[in-house]
Length: 462
Image (cartoon, rainbow, N blue to C red; front, top):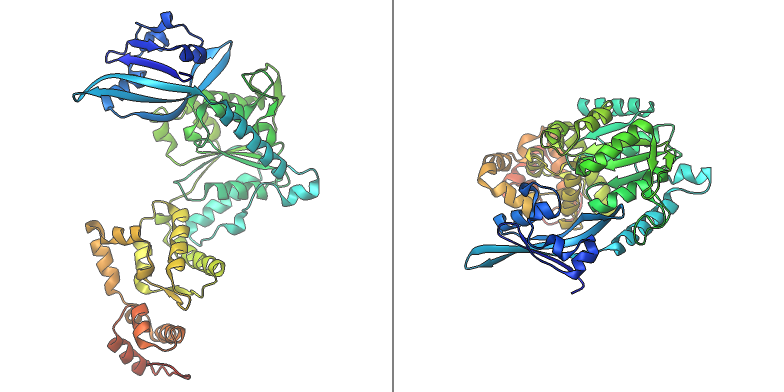
């Protein structure tokens, strides 16, 4: 077989180690077979054995990347999968299949080079217009005191040449703030380079950040890393909590000394970029769980920005709903103006675990599900997962409360009259359709039409 195979028994002893695995790891069969995995690979702690974990859980590990060895001071990254062998409901052994996957490295290098050519233009004029960003502080929508305070803090940070840590749940807009800080600073004409540390396999992340020199490993070329790509601009390290601990220690050195070494050389290269890091988890909990080095945290948290979740900013939620309705309606060529009271209450009571990103997707779905002549979004337009959420037992009380709060019962008369008038006009004065949109009965709507003196000045079915 061309793939490397390692087989271990229930005690963790290596039973099989083929020729292909020898080439991958630079070891010999006679050095491996018969030894415990932790002794053969010299990590000496059985608790760190993936084979033992697969044996205990009986769950395979599929398509993972890792560095299994180092040959001639060059790390050997492999893609591997590990599977349990089970007979008569008893886990007997575990085997791994490994392949070298240098083509992924080449593809990643090519992608970075293309991105570099786009975001690092040749003239100053273009750099001002094309610095790799989309957002400024003007794109941050909301009116809550908490948001205004965060924006002021971020603008103050932007005026200082200091590295930043942004903490916030997924979807709260961490990159939006990072780009805004960059564009508010003196570095705005220089590149903004972003990388998600969780999206790149561990064995490729180091070379992606620091770059390589020709011959550093098989297929390596002289390649600039992202620290150099950023030039005098900003490097945004998203989900820094996913960065391996080994790389975290190297990052500390970079932050302190402002120089990097490409893989395969001892020469140092000065860097001048601002570094903005982001975490979607509480850093102190990450430190407790040994996912974030405390010395790195204290280094990058000298200047930090905490973005509260959307559920704690109801005023911003209302503004964002209106904003996304407007933008989505324009994009989809619809005439949506607002929400029914019932739907509004549902959206305001929802916890929004995906924060602003989830809200934008939900509004998009609502507008897509609306008819071309609708002007109000209603509960019937909700995505299925939100309907299921509000039908669950824990949310029945909220849901029933919002259902009983009809829009034409809760509004004061002038607003009530305007809402009914607009709704009737949007459906060509079909009282049946209007009643459905407003969440009331036909008879109740007719009563309000008479009571408020609403007139039909055109033709229509009443």
